[in-house]
Length: 402
Image (tube, rainbow, N blue to C red; front, side, top):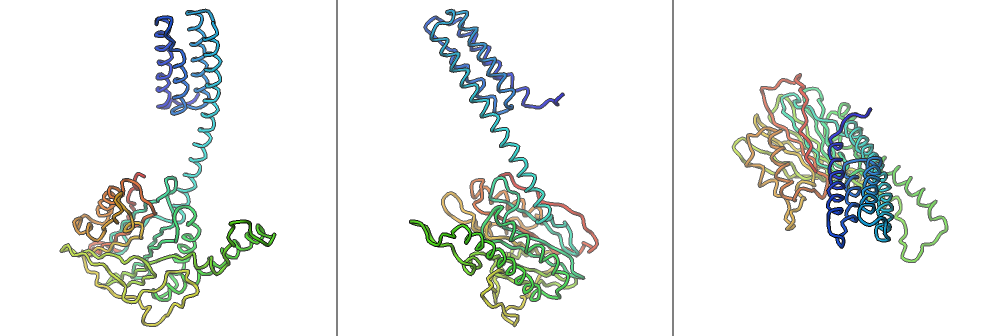
C-alpha cells in the first residue's frame, strides 16, 4: 500500500468540480449546457497526481457526462458529441500526465547526479581553518544545476591555510570537467609545492594538458563528422586545436594565510580582485600589482620572476577577506546596472563570515530580481586569534532559492 501523500487530498478538487457541474447542468434550463466544463477536472489533475489518477478522474468525468445526457435528453446528438470529445480529450491528458511523470523522474535523477557531483568536486569548506573563520556560498545560474564553472577549495599546509577560488569560462554543467581538473590538481599540488608561484605553475601545466587533450578529442570527432571535405552553404569551418585552446581558460586567485603572521599572500591569475574589510569599516579592493594571465592561456609565457611573485597584503586580527567570482560583480539589475559589491559590503561589517554571505546573497538576488545570469561563488575568511588550528567544525552556508 502506497503511503499517503499531500497530493492525494487535492483529488477532492476535481471530484468536487465534477459533482457541482453535473448537478448544476441537470438543474439548469434546457438551453444551458455546462457539461463541456467537465474537461476541467482531468485537465488540472496532472498538476498534483500521476497518469493513473488522471485516468480515473477522466473516466469519472465521462460517466458524469453520460449521466447528464440520460437525465436531460436521452442521448441526443449534441450530448453524444460531448461524450466522445470528453473521452478523447481525457485520453490526451492521460498521455500528457504520463510524459510529465517521466520528465519529473528524469529531473530527479539529474538533481541527484548534480548533488553527487557537487559533493565530489566542490566540497564544503570547513567552518574553521587554523586561526581563520571560513564561510562559502555557491549560486548556480542554471535552475537544475547545483554546480557549474565556479570553484573554490581550501586546505591546511603546515602552519598555513591555502585557498583557491576560480571561474571557468562559460557556465553550468558544461564547465564541470574543467573545474574538476583544476580542483583535483590543486588538492594534490597544494601539499607538494612550497609557495604560490610553484603552485601556479603546476596548475597551469595541468590545465593546459587537459585543454590540449580536450581540443584534440573534439578535433578528431569533428574530422569524422566533416570527412566529405567541404562546407555547406553558410557552414563555417570548425576551429582548430589552437583556437579551441584560446577559447578555454580559468581565472583563479590563490591565497596563503600563515598562522603566525598578520599578512596574507596572493597570486592573481586574471581573477576579480578580492575585498579586504577592516574592523573600522574600511573596504579596500586588492588590485594585483603584477597580474598574470588566466590558467589555460598556454601560448602566453608565465614568468617565475618578480612580476609573478605573490603579493603580500596586511591581514590582521579581525580583518575579513572576501573572495568572489565575476558572477557577483557582473550581475545586472533589470535596468542594466551592475551589482555594487564594494559599496555594499561595508554596511555589514561585524556580521561574521556566514552573516556577511547571507546579507550579500539576499541583496544580490534582490538586485537582479531573483535570478542570476551567471554562476557566482563567494568565500569569506576572517582572522580570529581565539580559534585553534585543530578545530574543524564544519558548516555550510545554505544554498539560495533559485
